[in-house]
Image 1: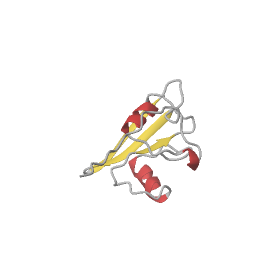
Image 2: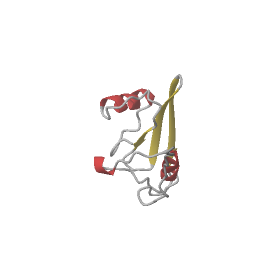
Image 3: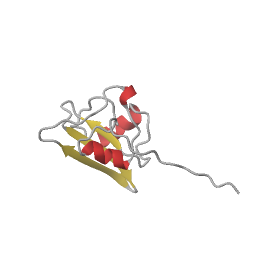
Image 4: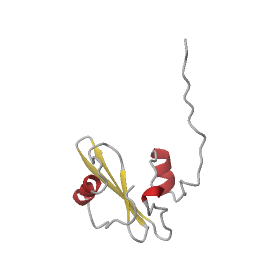
Length: 106
């Protein structure tokens, strides 16, 4: 998730340059990169899919997205939390059961 505000007039090329130059991340990694506008009512998601970039967007009619404004607020989220965010839930308030990992000892 890109911190703060992004000019969402940018399309695939502009957003992929932001991922590489400002976020210092690999836009070809297959990770989903999220960007939000100043009004926090529009989100664009960019990701590399096998042989090309995909760009997805969602615009809210009345509500606002909960979006990080500082680096301390940035979360590494999974698919489930991304869906929650896009559904309007505040993901920092939701606490799912922690995933347990067991090790077999022989």
